[in-house]
Length: 125
Length: 487
Image 1 (cartoon, rainbow over the protein chains, first blue to last red):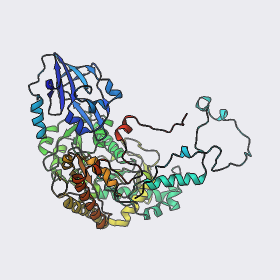
Image 2 (cartoon, rainbow over the protein chains, first blue to last red):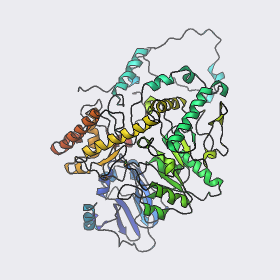
Image 3 (cartoon, helix red, strand yellow):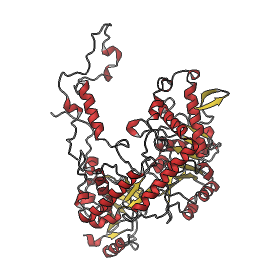
Image 4 (cartoon, each protein chain N blue to C red):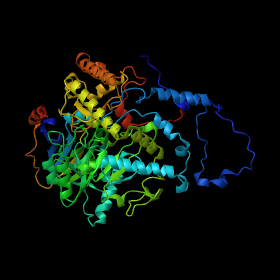
């Protein structure tokens, strides 16, 4: 699954399935944040703009925004994170997904990095 | 060091029937409780209070207090918190009956001395800040921020410029700054830092505009760096019609040297419990007075003390944002700060700042070969190292902080400011002798060496504290907030 993921410079990953984009944070990001203790999820139906913070991750170290990699409408959130925020640490790329955004047109993913490009990018962080 | 068992809770010490006091027989007619308190507020079950003797209570809390770390116990280099020594003479001052035994309901003419103290303290803070008029109302630093922003908002509204709702905050700011903005309904606009750690002036120019309410700035900032562009920054914000708010959390670096008002600030808050050596937390409440320019004085929270002839009285400023605190604030904290200012005098306060800056630079220069120093320039009263070099050994800044406890130190501030990866923020303060600074430097070096040779020593630290490493994630995810009797 992870080979299909695309990454942002802010360390979110996206998985494009038609006009639905699933979003989470990268393994690097969860490791940097440390133990996540609370996830402030958006509501289904919220409209988000690309680059806007749409969820908040609270760790023992810091509070960080998760930025929307695309503009669209929230159509699903990972409610399991309400009771088990640790899923973001334990399974950031799968069970720790955060939300799904429905986009109007085709996904503009030209700016996003694939796995190899992201690995290269991390070397320079 | 020997391992001590954690102290049982006072509830666990309870023995049924044990008493601290036995009350005398009732010798007045008894009024049924139901006649005094409405039924719906009366509890039906007896509260499960611990049943202990007075001696047990004293021992229990004395034991707990001995497990605490405070500046009276050891070095406390908690960056941005100014954990300086609290002189004992202040306790003498506040035990004077004329200060301790007065009541806020007393008529003004019977507490003229207390009013004079508040008036003079406000004047001194105005002199130190280079501004016009103080209000002592706010009860803490963040409360001061809220008060200052409310004054700015009221000022703009009063001038028919209520559309100014954007407050610019640097990315290195204290977290309270954006939080205070949100509390007054302002939109936070973040300005990035430049490569020297100050406000990116070019970026700031693009961010100001007709909706700018102002800029909040800590100077020196949370990197411990003095923003050399402050006068340019002030001009940019003022020309856009905004005001400048000075977060005084780091004022320990500038007393008697730079007056924020002279560099363009319109509002300042001071943390009396930092800069002016009144106790933090357990030693008493804080106080976060604000001082403002002449133009903003009519909007101050009140009441403030005014002097008329040789009489002092409480006055509500003309367009005041109102009261922010019951009665007159944390009065005895004012008395301690007043004693501090008077016992130092202008020259002494300048020396406080000079020594605080000297200590920080000394430590920074001796530690910068051991840890990374992202902004290598002369610092003010504190400096920020990065623990990112420890990562290759599987060690994090958090582990270093835990290990410091083993040596009897309170850890520095860690993971703040956010602009530095694995930040370690050290503020030695002026009240420590050089030998303490040297000992701490040696321990930091030792721990850095341990990270290479024996990383587990850090990742499993602390080893010598009454409570070993706590599971912070579990504590946050599943907090246990009160004792519950075992069923």
